[in-house]
Image 1 (cartoon, helix red, strand yellow):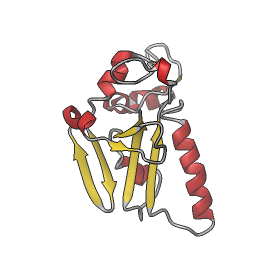
Image 2 (cartoon, one colour):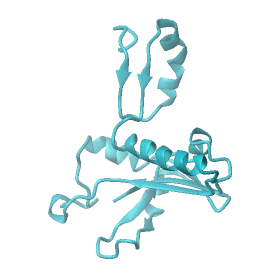
Image 3 (cartoon, rainbow, N blue to C red):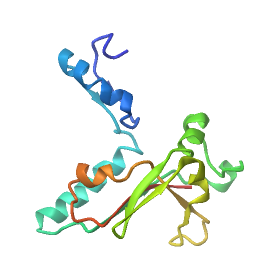
Image 4 (cartoon, rainbow, N blue to C red):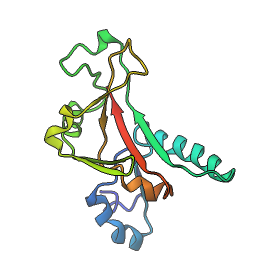
Length: 161
């Protein structure tokens, strides 16, 4: 619709294959679609890059990168089997919980098929009173290049719940 109406677009949505396929048409019209500029994804990218740019500016290298995002609702606001506060489309949340995931951990590539994602969570013991867990989030491998962290042997992006 943005191309048809000759307007630029800004969205918090992930860059999909469909959006990538529009690149040529967008360039022909001089248009831009700016993706992943919300809370998650978005602010997580910006804060990560700020920290990593500072480390690199001081001559450091990034050997390990992990980032987790997610809203933490009050228990009374998460009164459903998923213990989740739906602040966006419930269908979107359920669909996202079935996405394939791939990440790098200590030099090993780990893949999780979407139908097994909810069975492959890590408990977050940093907050023992909150009973939180973390789900791997889509394809973390692309961030090794996007974040320019070639020395990282761990690259993980996740969602807490």
